[in-house]
Structure formats: C-alpha cells, structure tokens
Image (cartoon, rainbow, N blue to C red; front, side):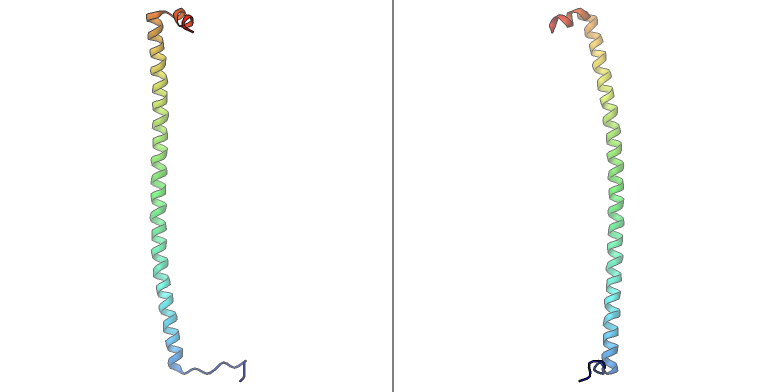
Length: 91
C-alpha cells in the first residue's frame, strides 16, 4: 500500500464529510454567539454592581461623617450641661 497516496474516496463521502464539517462549524458559531452574549450580559451585571458598590461606599462615608458631627454635637451639649472640667475628673 502506498502511504503517500490516500485511499480514494467517492464523491458522496467527500460531500458528506464536507456537510458534517459545515454543520459543526455552524453549531460552533451559534454557541460562540450565545457565549458572547452571556459574557456581555455578565459584564453589564458587573458594571452595575460596581456602580452600586461605589454608591454604597459614598453613602457610608456620608453617614460616618454625619455620625462624627452628631457625636461632636453631643459632646458639646454634654460639656454645656456638666462642664468640660467634669469630664476630665471622670477619667
């Protein structure tokens, strides 16, 4: 048997192989489109979650600032009621 010369195939085998190959390529392309759309959707979800996280961090910073201001205001009120010297005596 001559290794350099492939076994001849009839034309119908060649056409069948060609059609199967084309079908596989088409299925691959369809799957690729699906995966690309899934990736795009997930990327959008990640972007939205990052936006939400940034908004939450800004709100937390704002609330921490308000808390510090409220604590300072409470300290001033306490100093007015008890006097600043009383606080040092408590320590």
